[in-house]
Amino acid sequence: MTVLVTGGSGMVGKHLKEVAPEYVYLSRIDCDLTKYDEVERVFALHRPTQIIHLAAKVGGILQNIAQPADFYDDNININTNVLLAARRLGVDRFLSILTTCIYPDKVDQYPLRETDIHKGPPAQANFSYAYTKRCMAVQIDAYNKQYGLKYNYLIPCNLYGEHDNFSDSNKSHFVTALIKKIIDSERSDATNIPLFGSGLPLRQFMYAGDLARVIKKTVDEGITESFNVAPKGQNYSINQMALMALESLNKHNWDITYDASKPDGQFRKDVSNEKMKSHIGDFSFTSFADGVRKVYNEIKKRSA
Image (spheres, helix red, strand yellow):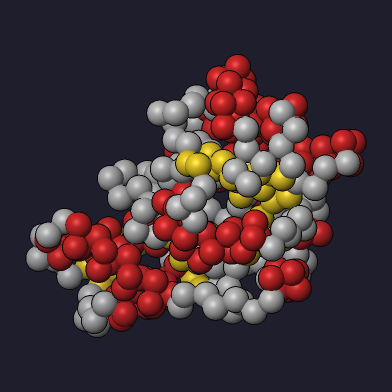
């Protein structure tokens, strides 16, 4: 069996390589996924039996607001190219990683379930990006229906990890950016961290290494269902998470300041993990405090 991974140099890809080094990992150096001929050539070269599709054009909330067309064009092209090439080359299994941004901005009941995806439009802040990921779910379901395939997708909650983009805060996830702000404040002998918005929105975060383990388990056990991936009960406000991060790093007297001129984004989008549990059983997620310490210690070690 040959498992080919797109986005192999990204945050999740690097964690996946730690638990599944036998997979073949592609980065943008190996293939421009926005060009179909190049995708087909590289896929034909490796002849995978399964593809794990992690690659995407991603960015922070400000980039998504400022460049909606870029995010839409690139991600629609990438998703269509990899899926079309996989089908034409007879790839048996295809697993795509989506995002909880695909869910409606507001629903009547939380946590969100897989059946809620089309009950309303995504949040405006990530609208174009979110729709490209929602379209990927539609495309996979359509391929399965028309061609009798067993392709699937996982929908993880927000992620963070030591392999996130620490060099560009506009592209990193909130918890990653939070940890970087803490480290930057340490270096300047400050005892406060500045954050965007009001601090009120609720977020459900997961350590990226946990998603990598779920992906491997899904592949190893031949699971073809699509479902959310998230820890149960970890749904905190931005302010709570900032306070928890400071507490876990023994920075008890630090202050947090908020820039209300910056957008909050979607207020709430926590998802149910009941379907996940029905397919992979009990799964031990990394606690938020342990995950923050792990990422903080690793980044400090790299910069020592």
